[in-house]
Image 1: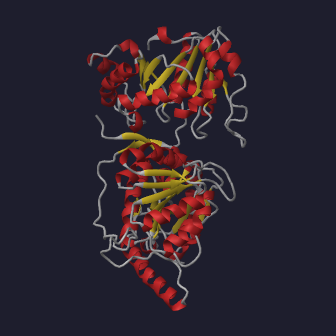
Image 2 (image 1 turned 135 degrees about the horizontal axis):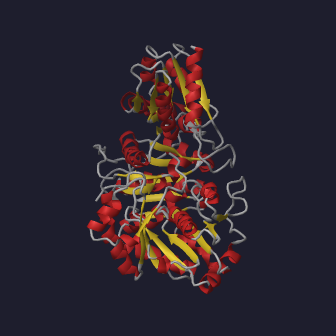
Length: 231
Length: 353
């Protein structure tokens, strides 16, 4: 991961189902692991999908010292689309890290009310792409998706996250084959690559293969499965 | 590079429908199926089709009737309360002998219920969707791959037998993501739609699509003709999957997402020394009653596992026809039974034999 691109506030956006939430949770866990004395928060700003969300990872986050900022009624019978009330003060706090997990595609509209706070915080806005999601499977598709998100949120993306995966069936070659896609996306979107995500539990030998395929090992970001698996 | 793509179940339905030549989608948003319409809205215009968000479910189903009467491949999609609203139109479509696809990504009921997955619409899909003597072909996918393959199959079945087909999924299947391979779906030879009201061009007699018959003898005759086709569907289109039934003392019967839980549970039960197996109906209508009746010769008991208060269990009892005890296990209202719960039930039933 190119750590120079990570600021005190990280906003994670992208096409739904691309792996935003899993990346956001892992980013928060990694920040906490690196700086245990610094407060790290993760905010669930997904007002779109009630099935898969940050709230599902609460237990894991709390056990590692990350503070989840959830909508007041998340997971309850009144789980309505709403914004966690502590988000604005968290974004404005330069002393800690805040990761904001945004809803997919037009879910980015919820960012609008925090636009000035996010701009003032000089936040990193990370656009997550996945070569195996059909609507963003080409660099052009990814660029269109990013353009929609930027227009709705009023924010500019600052870096690209390559989270190409096929869920539990992901193989090392799928990730290696996605490098060219990630480069094309980065070029067309005019973004630097923040990282290439992978799960050591699924592809333990990836770093070695990645290096011999000419990839920059410092850009690899190991992740664990942090979001809910229904089956 | 893998030929597979990573998709939500709802997206797989939409993409498979487009690949199968569906050009019209009429719908109204409702959780947990809204991604079907969202995907259609993005993709259909690009392939020369039309995705229309109607003013209501009632309007959407009647638009579907029109599109189908004109001989086009068309579909609608909704979730449980929305299907209730569509039921009048579905009855009209059945009465007009029109082929189309109706998708139900089930959520908890009754009433507004909840947004979590359920299988509480089994009766509705196989018995009570609309008034009159009528049947739908009902297909129950169990994976995101089947959300795609059975969507394609449903269109072909509907066209072959000139009747509506329903894909009966649930919120879990609609929302979960799995790799899907779109490369190899079997294709059927389909009859020409020579009944379609798509303009005579002055070259033929006009076609009439209608469900109104004032004379009872004519209405009866139209129903009898339709039931001849239903009989053919029952004879030729039953589909199911069997897992370890050969030596099974206890056969679970489960469809859709519940069958995946049942599969894990029978493996656990076998570790505990109980010979359990699974019959997974893929078609809920026609129901695999003949095969279940055969299994009753070797199995000692049947357990229907469902996310409801017990609906399919009635069909299992009818099929087993008193030869063996049939019991029910399930959770309802959006709760998903756990592998542990189902395993414990298998062991309970085994102990009671």
